[in-house]
Image (tube, rainbow, N blue to C red):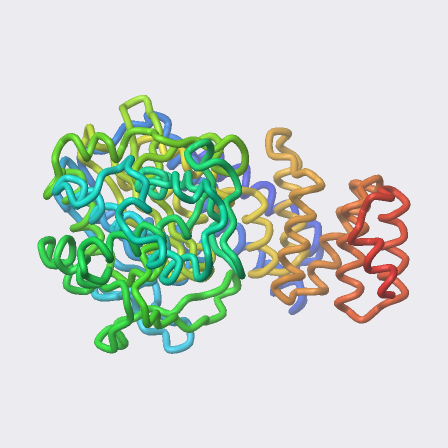
Length: 512
């Protein structure tokens, strides 16, 4: 670790001397201050990354937790990942051992996150709903493999769910197991008529519509709405007093607001209707109680719990192809046994839940930031340990990724310092950055409104990779955003000459 710090120090000392040969002058002093500050931050990051790598190498599920160290380490990780607010709950060996909030619930008001802070739980809603269904299966209210149209009059389904006539015969094959396992063939959301994309049960395609369908069937069978069912089967028995599938005004003082990738405040939503797929509002403490109950198989038979964490569907293509789905939760194998998981992504709210049944250990993570899951892997490893396979599949670049590090350097210190960070990575062959990575940074800067920074980053990329059509396409977008149509036309033309199939450049040239 000392050697690592020394190498960083020597690198930045050399750069400081290069820029400030005389050592005098206001500009030079400012430059030294910037480099020293960044040196300290990068040292912390790299040393921390070294420690995390050392910790994670064993990949063992933890049996103890050092909360004193976590209280110090988590804010550092949040700062590196640009996460505004975060709450975490940890279960170990069947006991709910710790929960805590960090950061702010609103960047503008600077209201701190507390134990009472509420978040939009997004798709963790599906896991809580699945727990209700598991209990109903245990009670014989419905079975997993009987077509749902056999439980409810088709006219009712058409009215409350389809919003039209059922014209696809495959609809009559759909079961509760298919809904919970994302194997219905329904889309995740719909605009207009409902379509079935594949033979039900033959594939896996993530679908909120499948959960909505099962919700309507369950409500019909029980003669109760989802909120009533949640209170009866989950919130009441588990004493989750700060959770609801529909908005309640009592939540207002404690509700977190969302934040974009740049920290811009986005007001939370107030869902007027309970939706099994996404409308849950909850706290880390409540969901920690929930996860504890699941891991202890409370209110569940051993049979239905094993069914829930057994793979029943698998994707043939797409992001989720490496993973399998059970009954409402993703399932994966590790060196220490099976794990189940789910993530939540509501734009400016991100969430994650994972459990290891053999060890009765797990984690709940709630964040009010678009960057929230960029620290998910590292946080999971330092709190509960174990293998977290989903983070190698989900489309969230971890904050330790060089792309995110350089992007943050641009945001915090400007392009000049960021390019020095790039040079540092470039010196290490195993950390050489690709054209795609640099292009992604430039594009992200453009979307964040940092047009001049994006221009400098992409210009450098064009010098490094002069044969890449994508680089010139991105430069065209930057110049277009800057209002320089002549330069934009030049770069779009260059991109199209390198790749005549680049439809974006062709479309922009027609516009210009």
